[in-house]
Amino acid sequence: MKRHTLLLLILLNAALAAALAWLWLDPKGGLRNTHWQPPPAQKIDFAAMVPPLPPIGHTDTSQFIAMLDRPVFSVTRRPPPPPPPVEVQDNLSSAKLYGIYVGEGSGGVILQIAGKNRRLRLHESIEGWTLQSIQGRVASFSRNGAQRQLQLQRSKLDANTGAPMPQPPAPSVVSPAPAPAPAPAPADAPAASAPAPAPASPTPPAARDKPAPDAKPASTRLRPTFGGTVVR
Image 1 (cartoon, rainbow, N blue to C red):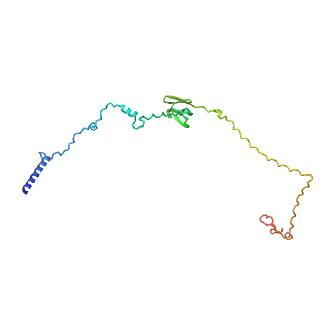
Image 2 (image 1 turned 120 degrees about the horizontal axis):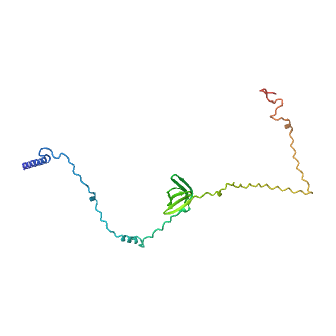
Image 3 (image 1 turned 180 degrees about the vertical axis):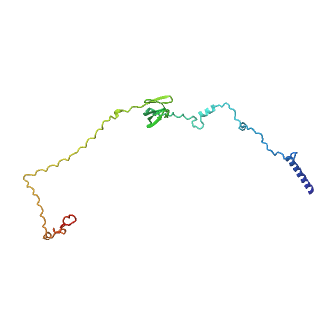
């Protein structure tokens, strides 16, 4: 039994070796498929990769209009009222033109609008108004077909005539009132006698005879010096 199994395995290996030799070797004994050949290019069709869209057909929009007329999440099933129109405040009507400057191919104005001083060049806009042109002392603005002009006012010369300002009045000096004179004494009244001076206190004899401590005899006093020599 073992001998038949061993013989069968040998025959099977020989058949496999012959099959491999037939696949790898050509009739001349050389190796097959030793040179690589690039495959042909394949064209990619992107349209086939995208799913087709449904055809364009007619859609009944009346259903959408009915949903808008009767909204589902509204208590009254009525659309909300439209918002009131926004009133645009026209601040250019109260604007004041303070200055105009013109250069080569450019120019502009200086004006006060809405309480603020602004500088605006030609063809620039402010609050919807566009500066279109400058002619002399007049600046022209436009907005949605409407035209408006601002004129540069001349300064009023009578506001400051150059007269000197009035001087304030000098302060008045109030002199004090004179004191009232004393009333005259009656004739029969006795004249008041002046007070007598107090008598001077007598100097004791010991104090008169005793010389002052800092006093020196006339013979011992120094005289002025002349040339560094003391003259006695």
